[in-house]
Length: 166
Image 1 (spheres, helix red, strand yellow):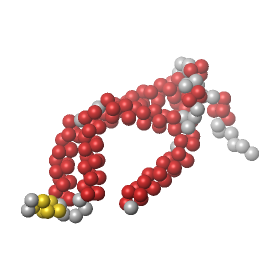
Image 2 (cartoon, rainbow, N blue to C red):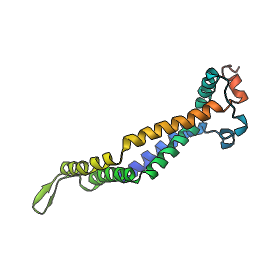
Image 3 (cartoon, rainbow, N blue to C red):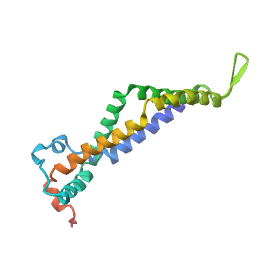
Image 4 (cartoon, one colour):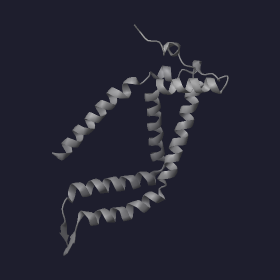
C-alpha cells in the first residue's frame, strides 16, 4: 500500500513538471536553427542574446543539463554504484527492517544497519569523486548553454517581448 502512495506522488510530480517546465519546451528545429547562429559584435549584444535565450529556451536547457548529468553518471560507473548502494540500502532498510530483529542471538536495530551502510557507503562515495563530477557538470553545462545562448540570434518575437497586448 505504501508503494502505491509513492507511485502516486511520483506521477503527480511528473504531471506538474510536464505542466510547468515542459510546456515551454521549444521545437528542436527552433533550438538547433544553425542559420541564426552568428558572432555577437560586442559583450553587450552577447549578454542581451544570452539573457533572452536563457529565458526563452529554459526547458530545452534543463533537458541539456539532465542529459549531461546522465552522461556523467554513465561515464563514472563507480559513482553510479556508490549512489545505487546508498540509495538502495536506505530504501531496503526502511522497507524490510522497520523494527529491531534478532539474528544469531544478537539484536540488530535499523540504526545499526544505517551505521553499517554509511561506514561502507560514504568512503565508496568519496572514492567515486562526486564533487569533481558536480563541478564538471556545472562547467560543461555553463559552456554549452553559454555558447548556445550567446551565439544564437533571438527570433523576431524578441523585439515585441516588452510590449503589452490589448
